[in-house]
Length: 163
Image (cartoon, rainbow, N blue to C red; front, side, top):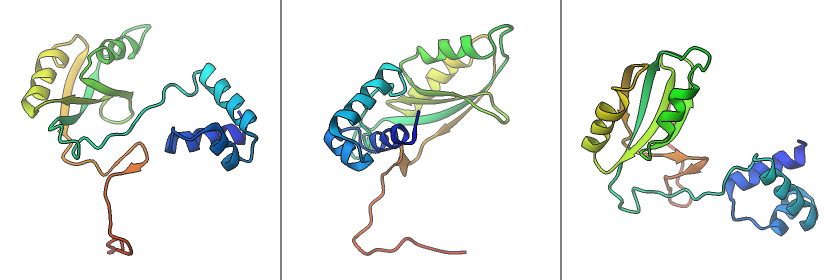
């Protein structure tokens, strides 16, 4: 993968609605070359999916998100993969990562209420074999998601600064 492919990926990550013509202009490629490169990135599953970032607080969804950290006993010959696959199959699990530090896995879970998220953790996650410990953190407010800032300032308003 060369620098032009990486630039196309960054541009698409920021705005997946850009046309091949716009991408070509921004990456100094012809429209056809930009389209060919995008198709190749899709076929090689480097571009996995195009998506939309939604500000659910503004959409008045009223849902709750939580970050759940898990301590897990890895499985012989499979490590964390099998338990991660089981966890990923729950529709409540929006993201799942293997992480370093005190915990092994990190999940982002959504539900309609805090009670629904708590019930999901206590009834579906905590009792699973190989789960040793859970820590649940409710998301209070999202400031930035997938590179998109969710806060707005008036024109000319400065960012507060302090030492």
